[in-house]
Amino acid sequence: MILRVERLTRRFGGLLAVNEVSFHVEKGEILAIIGPNGAGKTTVFNLISGLLHPTSGQIYLEGVPIAGLRPHQIARKGIARTFQTTALFNQLRVIDNLVVAHKLRTTHGLLDTLFRTRRWRADREKSLARAVEVLEFVGLREKALHPVSTLSQEEQKRLAIGVALATEPKIVLLDEPTAGLIQDETDGIMTLIKKLKAAGVTVCVIEHKMRLIMDLAERIIVLNYGNKIAEGTPEEISRNDAVVQAYLGGEYAA
Image (cartoon, rainbow, N blue to C red; front, side):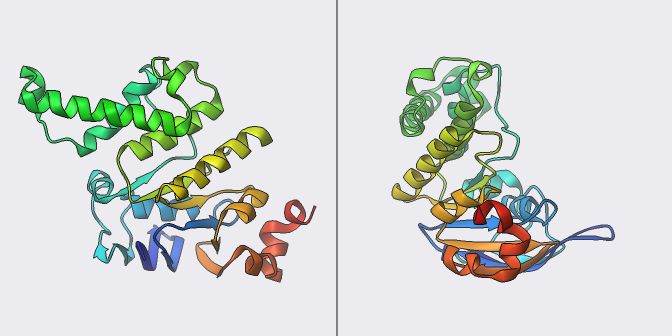
C-alpha cells in the first residue's frame, strides 16, 4: 500500500464536498475514481496534493501522515498530479517546462544560481538529462525546443504528464487526462498511462470516459455527492446496478 486515505472530509461553509471518504492505492496499480460532476473527485485530489487541507481525516503516503502539508512538501515526498485544465508555461519551450519541474529534486540556491557555481552546473545537467529522458518517454523528443503554445491539445496532455514525471514521483494523480480528445488521441494517452504502470509508477486517475476506465483500471472507486458509494474491480463495478444506472448507463451499455 503506497497511499491510504482515512475518513477524509472537507467542508466549504455549509457544503459537505467530501464526506468521510476512505480508500487505499496499492503500489504499482492503476486506481480510478469516477462519479458525476460535483461528486468530489477533484476535491479529493486537491486534498491529497495539498492544495486544500482536510476538515478532518488523514492521508498517509507509505505510512507517513501528510495531510496539512504544503503542495511543494507533498510533491517532494513523491506525489505529482495533473489538472483538468492543462497547467503549463505556454511561452517557454517544452524542455524548459520539464527542467523547471525537476528543480524540485535539486539542491542549489539563489547564490548558486547567481554565481553559477559547481552545484548549480551539476543540478542543471541532472535536470536536462531528466528532461530528455521524460521527453523520450512521453513521445515528445522531437518537440523539445518548440514553445508549448505550438503544441496540439493532445501533445500538451502528454507534456503535463511529463511534467509530473519530471519530479520523480512515487504516485501520479491524473485528473481527466483525456478530456477534450478524440478517440485516437484518447487511445494514445491510455497507452501512455499503461506505460507509466509498466515503468513502476503508481497511478490514480479521474476520468469520465467509462470505456477507457474499464479497460485501464484495476480497481475503481465511485463517488456521489462527496460519499463513496462503491469500490471494486471493473467487473464488480459494471455489475453494480446503482453504479451502472447512475454513472455508466448508456455509454457503457452501448
